[in-house]
Image (cartoon, helix red, strand yellow):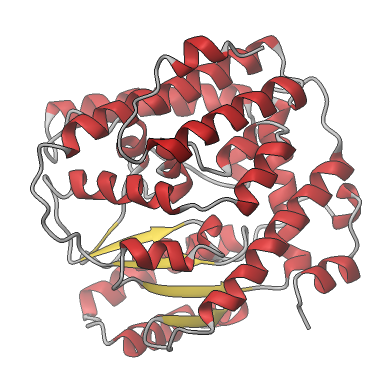
Length: 364
């Protein structure tokens, strides 16, 4: 059982802390009452949360001493998990004008490390150690989601600073926490998100931030309240293909930490959460023009990724030069292989049917 008192002692209060404190309480209670973690799982969860709170403290201390310069506007890739977001994200990352937070920066952001410095190399090594233990306790996870210390990663690893991240649900059976996330105001997570990006800009301010996280779905209003110039690329795919994949990923992660895993419950909880997120997103995007919100298809990404990239750049009036195109083309075969990888899972493994998924996610 997680010791709430010890963990809460790590919490840093500030003018925006009330929601984060509530999120922390819901999270710990949900883990203690519902997760059925192993001894190692409890230690891992406690360490993770305390590490996130430690980084929160460092971010709060660093941010208060910075001026309030405008953060570079972001372009944000969204879509249901496993819908090709990573392939598209990695393609866009080949443009040197697009900057994404790297895995090691999310794990060990402060004190700031200058590019190519000894401090940066040490941070990368520390993050490599985290990934080593990840592979030891969650084998084969790279088959579903490959992570490298120096690669861009999803914003769910930034939203942990406000204790509002679906990452915790991936790690442990926390249905009460998931329900809380589904209905809560996520504005505070984007306040901490912007603080983190502002700090990173001290060493490397980009033309554009390139961001990705499926859980941005349904949070367009909150994002635009912090990043009014944000642009969104929404990639869509048949959810009957994506849902079993995210269930499988969650299953793989939890196997390293949990005593028991109910696959049918996991399937229903996953479907309900993404259905609610998708419904909210449909309502919020109705007010956005194509210059702010551009929808693309997974099949177009797989069949003709370069033309899809050209459409995106044309829509947002971004300049696309030959060097960037060549860099993207060199990545395409790797990205296609990863995006089309076949895995041994089905909807039925998680108590779901194709018709149910299509109905819940309004897919024709």
